[in-house]
Amino acid sequence: MKKADTIWMNGKLIPWDEANVHVLTHTLHYGNGVFEGTRAYKTDKGLAIFRLRDHTKRLLNSAKITMIKSPYTLEELENAQIELLQKNSFESNVYIRPLIYLGYGIMGLYHVKAPVEVAIAAWEWGSYLGDDGLENGIRVKISSFARNSVKSTMGKAKAVANYLNSQMAKFEALESGYEEALLLDDEGFIAEGSGECFFIVRDGKIITPPNDNSLESITQATVIELAQKLGYTVEHRRITRDEVYIADEAFFTGTAAEVTPVREVDARIIGEGKRGPVTEHLQKEYFDVVYGRNKDFEHYLTYI
Ligand SMILES: Cc1[nH+]cc(COP(=O)(O)O)c(CN[C@@H](CCC(=O)O)C(=O)O)c1O
Image (cartoon, rainbow, N blue to C red; front, top):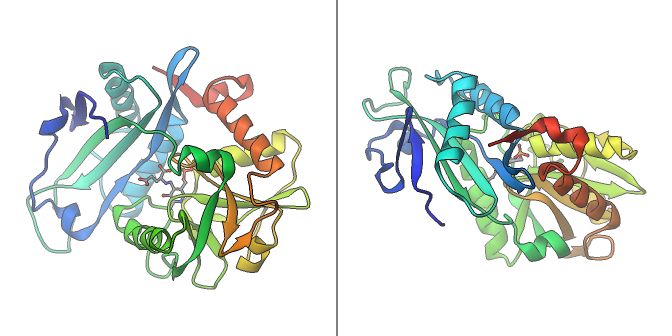
């Protein structure tokens, strides 16, 4: 990972190598911290953060869900992200990682007296699932792990602790020779990927699971809005694994994953075993949106 010069920590820009925490930082031990993943793209008019407000709102919603009181307002956090990108220099697209976490000072599960800290880092990050994956699709394994259950966790919070489930699913998939995991919910319906939301295409219709068991994905929402504007029928409904196997196309969406085609699931070739025509169309349109080439969506961009 290429270091940037500085990281924003609790209101100050400090040198990357000095952005450290104490080993008894509460979140390190108990996993109650919330974070975001936001991309900024090199558009013709310079670097632009995509859906900054939506991501920052979700960060504060995540904090509210897990009972962390942010010391900064929505505007202060937005301005901090803008300042971080202005004060660092980046050659290519940037990934921004805000984190609100519980710092050093108390141990034990009752967290309310732990100090709340905020750090925002940014680095240059290419395609999450590989350039080849973006173009030709990836191979996916249905995970042996069910997605965190709504009976025991809260998936609308982008909370640190929720990612042990994702990490183990990702590990299992890669160790089995695949490139990503697709998780079922605890009733056996498709939930989402380890770090993405999921779509299939059947008979020209675009289908994606509701967010009962997944993060409310900003990229999923953008792709749905885009697809509807392009005249596609979009269904938000439950999907079973065997419906995935017989789908004409499938793809993941996420800030990091962008629109990544899926060409195989559990050794079943999806469609023609490559990026499908609808996926390719949506992927191209999505990149036009985030690079500021689609004026109907330019309100989502915050130019730095
Ligand atoms: C579990 C999960 N589900 C769906 C999504 C898609 O949400 P959105 O980015 O708002 O469209 C993400 C983002 N996953 C982050 C993973 C990055 C990482 O590995 O770290 C991301 O895409 O930034 C998830 O982590």
